[in-house]
Length: 235
Image (cartoon, rainbow, N blue to C red):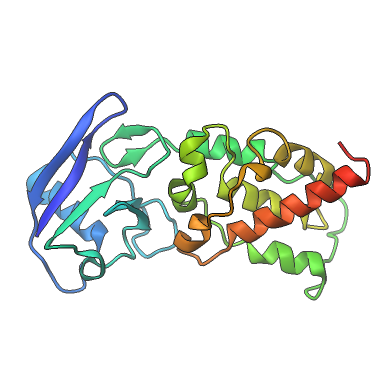
């Protein structure tokens, strides 16, 4: 099969074509590894676990963001070829490796860090499994920050200040955590410019999430919470 791979950095680059043998049960990550091992050892890319746990191997495959270790070639092969590129909406370090700093900076800017209410010397505050907040928090807790939703988001592509689905999903998770004391801080962060109200509800984040989470639902929850806070006289 013919595989076009993006080669370059943040300054310049172009697609380079490789001829790769087609094999049974072959993943996109297998293809990228084969190119590096047999055709060009200078090819740069990122991966860790290879079993769909870490999310670090995410790339654009035929224009769509995917975990390459979970994506089988035969499911995405188009006209006998593939196109592999670095994740969209992130600066390129080299070839298929992107700079994740902007993604994580927005994660923090959205209030996505725990705001403790107790010290390590206090007993742990028990949270009952049947509580409403627990259900809302659990719905988005399996996010592993792979940035697939961020790459899929057209609002991020159009607005560099938009916090993005993963950061807002994390904010909603913490907002519903009864052990977190930063509820109003979170609402202030996500209601500012580039926050939850910038979302156009197109749903690409939910469509492409490999863990089948629903960031759009989390963002809708933040929209309701910020509106209610405003009506009650919050900031």
